[in-house]
Image 1 (tube, helix red, strand yellow):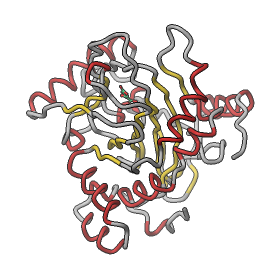
Image 2 (tube, rainbow, N blue to C red):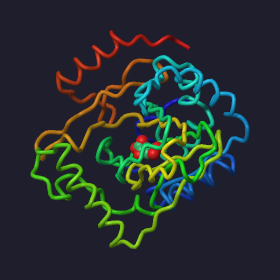
Image 3 (cartoon, rainbow, N blue to C red):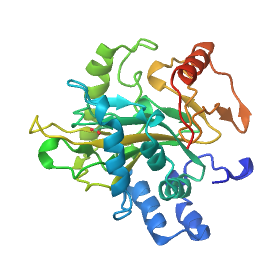
Length: 304
Ligand SMILES: O=C(O)CCC(=O)C(=O)O
């Protein structure tokens, strides 16, 4: 998909803009894509249903990652490097076209997570972990590799919470630059739940069928609900996307004076994307650069 000329790239995602309808009308996009963008703008989560199109890929993903799930391992990071089927989903034209329409920039997938069971992950927004400048150019894509059952700990989310102010560790009460696993759990978790409660937002469960996809906006509060049956499986694939020509960083590890910049991978090429501001490359700390090179050298990604 060709990148838009830099002059046409919006500074805020279309889904966050009061010009969304104007943009959709001018796009000539299929009605299903427009409905997706409207749902994402309104709720912060939207469903992509490609009928049976992804069923075969779901089965291939399961076959390609099954051997990673040794006893005790419930999530696998970046299996895209070894799974052609994950790369095929991550770069699926139907997903990329919807994201490009909703955001107004060209998306690229940079990370994958496979789950065998429910994650039971605490409620959070991805804006704490993966943020961008300009803000909002990041989203999560969740593919059901099997029908989700209520007892398996479905993905939980709070419709409308993407419109709340971004909650960082400082707003949650942490001393600047002092994020630790303990204060993350003690401060961030309760703070986001308090905000959701004060805003009167109620949770929903993503009861997806095999092959259906949920896309969430970066600031949507979400997590994994409690597994009512500990033996149940809930096989799923999570992909994280950034958009071109942005600065990518980790707010949780940033301070008032130091932005913890990222050098995200690009699943489409197996390489990485250099962060940019208005078309110009920005600096990346040597540590991140070295980590990206090491990653590249030690984890071979076959071409496809
Ligand atoms: O799949 C889940 O249970 C939660 C996933 C999640 O919160 C995430 O990937 O950010």
